[in-house]
Image (tube, rainbow, N blue to C red; front, side, top):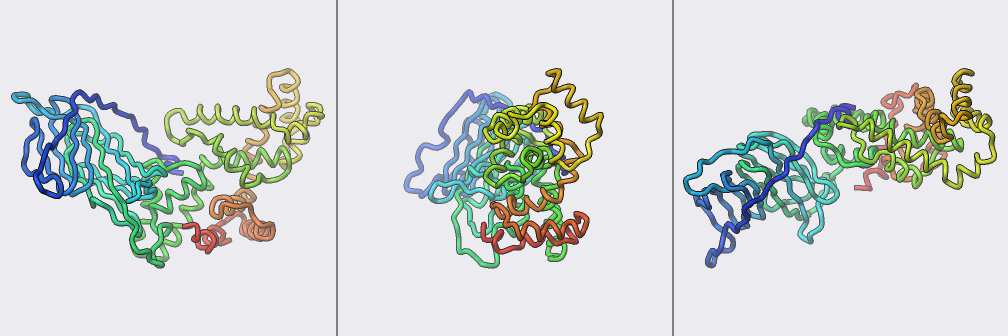
Length: 419
């Protein structure tokens, strides 16, 4: 996938805060601070019905404007006689969205406008972040989510320092039966990262996939096709193949069965930990995760009860037989020789067999159907439903569009009732 396989590498810039001061002291009987064309140590800004907090280093001018709510800008101010000079490094803009009870609002789209036009979405903690933001620019940050209103509606400010924080409060409004979160491209895409990859989206991948649907505009036929294809792309991604599909292979090769939902989710999470395809070092991280997981997997009571009494040759033959893949005699003998010579452990042999590309391909339809239940419905499949969809997918040679499998699951009442 493209970030799922095309991620930007972001670096983080630490803000060195040398001066902390309060921007406002008293404002009489006004309902909130009202500041217009004011200078604070060389910085100016505006705020209505809210609070403005400024942190920064001397020598960096700041300008901020907020239409209510809270606003925090780390950048600085300049002392009398010191020229205003922007920082050379890029900065960051981040914040948190909470509801009126102080609980996080996940899945709120945050748009950054002005010098840079970007988009992200809040995570489970209600937080968002834009890294590599060009300093010296003027920005507007605004949130949105179906059936929510936000206060303030936006924050506008000039980022001439290292970082800025802009917080929002979201309030649930009257729910419309015709408008739900999962119908919006951004929420739909974030949910797929969670359900299929077990992580929050990276910014570039989130934008790439949500934009695929947004490009349809109001064309309902286009939207339906794009939602189906985008959804399937998560299963077909390298990231899923190297994590979730491997877990399926480990159970199939070891025990001849697919994992249960409550086995698959935590096992996949362990292999996928800190793995984002395209991020620097992801390959090495994946290798470490897989090896550590399989080393622990072969020590589980179920595995030991199955294989401890077997010779090495019988162990290898048993694993290969359950894959249904025709390993050559040379391949099989090489594994046996390396295991006998202590060049491979039983865990390493299992990993090689379960991670074999031929095995991954041979079981792809089975894994695909399993993930319709695990990913969309968050439960184990009923056997009749599983075999119905497996037969249909096989009938169309794995073509999920012709089988109408993905479309059926993402439009099902059971899936939509989750949201």
